Image 1 (tube, rainbow, N blue to C red):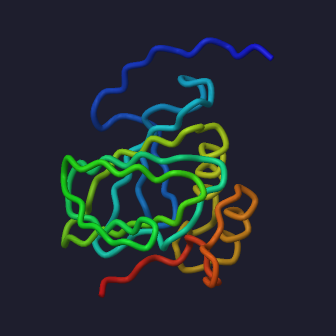
Image 2: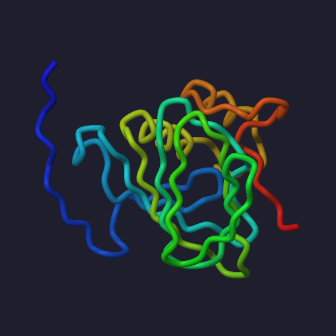
Length: 165
């Protein structure tokens, strides 16, 4: 099957399609229209003390580039502190999570490979009523459909925010 050509793009700072996904303010920088589904690039403005619990992607790899703030990174049972300029590679099938440890919103640029299904996931999560982390039921059903699962021994997937310790 032939893929259509990728579309060269320029996205100015602070521009892009805006979403709210499980309490995170997302700005989509590159989607399937530009990358032909090969990648999904978005900026995540993460409130203080908020993040995503450890989870596993079965279909995508993620690259996280910290732009502002201090994050706690969970990667395969180890915890790291990440600051502006740091890059993290979350591979599929490996447990990972993150949390903004600062007292101000943190900013990170994510690249998800491949990106087509992940873009659809975010569009679906953005469409939920009240779009807050409080009601996990509908969120967990959506995540499961997109092959995002909890690590063995955990009952919750990624929907419960990590609270400040």
